[in-house]
Image (cartoon, rainbow, N blue to C red):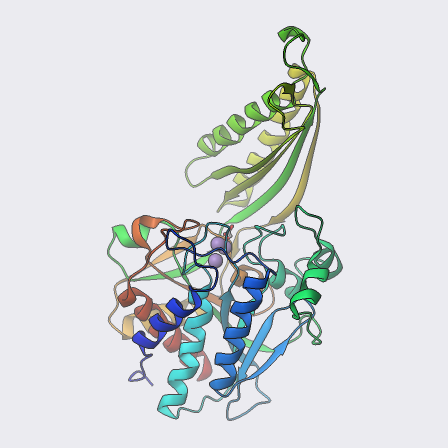
Length: 410
Ligand code: GLV
Ligand code: MN
Ligand code: MN
Ligand code: MN
């Protein structure tokens, strides 16, 4: 079993082929969930899975499951996978790596004529990024019951198009029910998206869990008025309130160190005219912490802070908490399988907590789950210049294979 290796060159070629879909000028990808480009990437993945001898099923929220039978198909599957959608200015590896590393595992098992005890499944989850449709990890959330499926299907993008409509349009509103696939163990391979592994020259991160996360939508309502005749003291400027809120969120990130992160990523100003005092501003907030009590403290600071801004600036305010998940430890056996796999292959490794959200965090609620990280250049991700070396990507996929085989033999 320990002699089995994946084919790193084939993995790299597949990553580069997939990266042509939605390729951007700066070397990244723009493959927003449920767009025509997302459909193209799904079609290519399905084609490759069928060529590798897998049967393919799609569930009601468009999650794709490809299955390679095992010796005993009554046993629950060993599942792996990630996502094919990207950020608007995304990289080639965020998500696609975990999906294609899974495919490479299956291709390598085929090459070796290796029969697993359990069936092996690869999943491509719908809308992991949360960029077009909020929140993130939507497909896995609906699958695991972390989110209400009907609510997920009704989520809309900024143009008012719903997840359900767009799934229909691209032909991925599947006929399989959500959830309920028996899973013995689940693994997701992913680039780290941060600087730790690269700095320590460790090709493998043994992910012990994910930090907690809270998403909000904040709206300030003031009064539109003429930018010339309206004296400063009389204004109800929603954008000035929002600007203070952005500062507040950033300060909360600093105040809850170590390990806190707090970001405002989107803003819409209305009426968005240069000589009208903005009457309405909408801002998104993303706050994360690995310790739930600290994340609750950040939440309290945010609520108090925006109320204070609104009062002082004479604005109406609405803070909607749209999504939340707690800090999530991974399964000790799955974590051990990753660590043992890395050790057996002689790869330097360290334990690490995921700063990013991943579908594996949802899966941890319904099945034993673990993750494998590999370094990315300068720790940069959610950026077109995101990069990783073929050697590290190969190492991660080899550890994925070993972890899956270890779980298969338990
Ligand atoms: C999405 O990729 C996230 O981690 O927020
Ligand atoms: Mn990702
Ligand atoms: Mn991402
Ligand atoms: Mn993510």
